[in-house]
Length: 291
Ligand code: ATR
Figure (tube, rainbow, N blue to C red):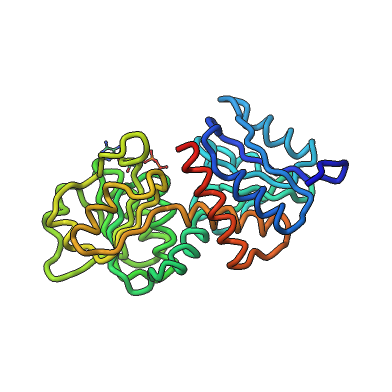
């Protein structure tokens, strides 16, 4: 691709941003679709988020992704916010509009698309949600919207699980979620099998030997384990699920599809299955070079 006067620029704001795999996704899509667009990581120092967002708009950037620690902090600096992102309370994609940026959350639609491809359904499911942080909050809202039958949030700090459960129940308008401590993983209702979604950062590279729960009896209760972590490709949580006979997936496809949905928002292009696969391979290749 030739960079010229018509090249549109998109980027990722966060701190740090050096380990991101998103350029592999977006620059592959642009190259394959023959679109004159580049995507670059842009580290934003603490305290400079407002300037970064205003500056990006002033510099005619087409769009931005937003990562840690700015996904919620960015909201006051937006011109508009999509209702889903507002409900989740986190924005990972900005689209240029008249006079500023509009904020979206493509993480949850990305997770949904990834789960669909992996044959994991949410409607009518009994779900165990491990963790009660920002990622868990987003997943819990998704579960409420997708008609999960019940959700148990297991978290080290039970008070955080309780306040999240309360908030989601309020939004859902039903008693969908209940909170539990990690130790309660040994006293789940008899006879049920669960979909477990792992949202904590335990097990993430380089501390790959960790899992939030080690209890083998707990893993025997899981028919499917979905870990939002993508590095390593197989986390300890996933191995424990598989060793107990369940199916396990990592967060790589969620990462891919949150990117694809952002790209579609920025360009109006449609990314088909063949192209998605190509972007996935490039991203995985990047991961193998630099974990
Ligand atoms: P994110 O936005 O990625 O969800 P977060 O909001 O910092 O990150 O949430 C991290 C989650 O991982 C929390 O649920 C946290 O548990 P606490 O609420 O008890 O802090 C969980 N977590 C992190 N380190 C943990 C550890 N060593 N053991 C158990 N849970 C841990």
